[in-house]
Length: 79
Image 1 (spheres, one colour):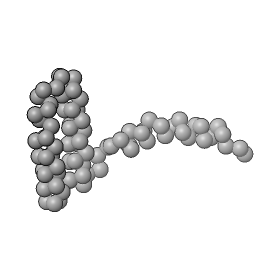
Image 2 (cartoon, one colour):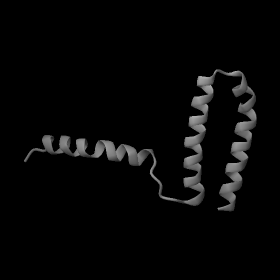
Image 3 (tube, one colour):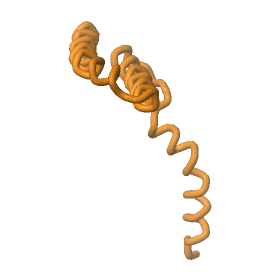
Image 4 (spheres, helix red, strand yellow):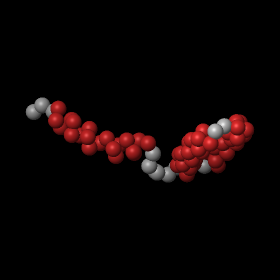
């Protein structure tokens, strides 16, 4: 777990040190999108570091498309 924390700290330090100067010069819309992407990245990083079973993109797709996929499969099944 310590290795994961150190790795994420190094990655975010490099990422933010490179992007902060450019982000200050950019439009507000770009900075909002960047902040949203960093927030999602932090969520997934915490999931990785703490080895939690939090919902992610796979779970969202599964929840949205599972029932329609089952219905299509049942409709196309030949008996």
